[in-house]
Image 1 (cartoon, rainbow, N blue to C red):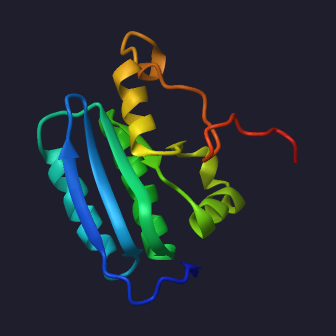
Image 2 (image 1 turned 90 degrees about the vertical axis):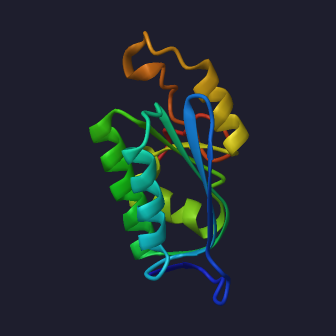
Length: 148
């Protein structure tokens, strides 16, 4: 299954550690060949000092296949098991539609940009259940509609 049409686009990944969050910026094609690179970067973050927030910025992703999507789901599950709040940012285009169609949109906390996610991390109150986790929002930042 393919999401998007960015064939030939190089895969890039970078990490920025903040006070209470790690921001992983992903660009290009997220799929069979690049998913192990994302997995390795995330493993390094989980093996390092505790970071209550892990933000994966997908703004520059041009293509995502089922392997890439599966890697995001695995990362969410691992984060939940370790008590790290996993946030996607910059979800757009076909990937946003696939997350909605598959029902996975409700599984992920999604913010329009990594800056928005970082603001949420800075404002989170660890004394609240779920670390002050907000209600889910659609990729544009609005509350999800309940209409079918």
